[in-house]
Length: 368
Image (tube, rainbow, N blue to C red; front, top):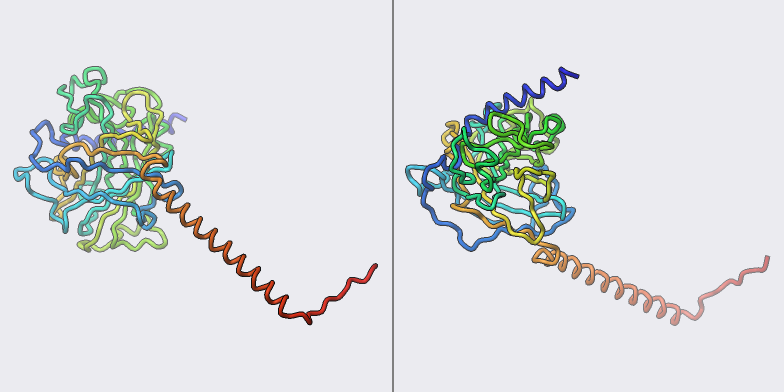
């Protein structure tokens, strides 16, 4: 039993070392690069039960509205520098089924994949404000330094982060929550690096369940996310395995697809997860890392989907999501009317045939 507990801890330690290079992410205390915010835009998550399978296949998202954002560098000497791929825009779709909330991110990009090197592959993150004082800039905005930031000194600045680095993830396979890491009480993903994290500022970012110096931060933490990725140039009709890496041809044009999901509510008790409510509006942000020119990216070299929080409105069935239900009801009503008319027409035809065929013979039933 001792060996079982020990080696997962070692795996977690190696994962945490890989995160050290990301400690300067998202503004790094620097002034925000000037850009134009999509003011007034609200992303709406409609009620669509029984619709989405998390497998990176976007076909089941057909008909669901998307929201499009110009990707710009969060920190750059040239704040007007856009994401240098095709339209340079990220499309976001989101729905919920009353229990889980689902996200689809589509980003144009020539196919690039370097097996085992996260910084040699695209990566995405979603961030949600948790604390009342949490800011988009500086990932929560707590002014404390790495040696003084704690859940007490940075209370109110918590942000919830999902970060998916695909260097060890197979297209179409599910990553995120897994028994090994959840038994250790952390939000890590030792297999596909779809990590459930939180932060107070760029220097004080941790996997759920751990705090400064990798000390346990609360009890019962786990990774609540699950997700998959692919590229539109990848053929994945029968499922891919590790031996198929790099899975596609380098430089092929297309779109990266990231499909993600987590429960609306989690068992978090220490302000590390965002708790979503149906009918509520929640602050959200999205970001992309991409190895431009096949050069591995650095943590601060990410592209943001907006310059500030994006309001995320989770609709009830009675909200705009009811338009979908209304369409279904309308379709069923039309179908029922058609069947009723067909039955009436059939009755009329049968009656007319019996009336116009008086020579039809009937055989009496002989008594037994």
